[in-house]
Image (tube, rainbow, N blue to C red):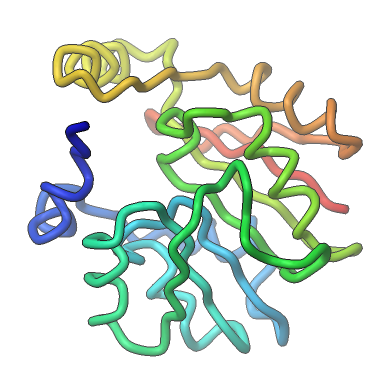
Amino acid sequence: MLDHFDLLAPIYDRLIKLPLDSEFNRILKLPTDGRILDAGGGTGRVSERFKTLARDVVVCDFSLPMLKQALKKGKLLSVRGSVDKLPFPDGSFDRILVVDALHHFKKPLAAVGELVRVLKPGGRLVIEDFDISRFVVKLIAWAETLALMGSHFFTPDQIGKMIADHGLTPAIVRNGKASFWVVADK
């Protein structure tokens, strides 16, 4: 089966630019003395900027070529795994982020359950994804459909419900861009 991310790994960081946003640090409540999980974090393009803001930063992704790129960034721990069955004990992480990835997960509800499971009490989960109500995001979704990526974009309320179904109270934070954050504390 074709894995788009395996193919894109060597050039992914050049294709997908990440604007630096200090608001993301505030949303994640950084710095922390604890551990951060970047779930579905691929090349570590997001979490590499948190290397000095936490004790450990772990990138978990299913694509081995993407994780190899993450390892090149140094000080990121890379773990191959599926987010719907995370290879970590309960309560392993103080902060968990999912950036531009939930719509790629094959079992998103199970993935959210796993994220809640591995989040420590007092920890924070932040899911950032594209707002499908925006025209530009509809174009992205269409392109990903044409590329047979199997993506399924969710509204902020749908993601909030997934989190609520696992016992946390979500808050939706709109950032004024083509994306949004859904935040929940445990």
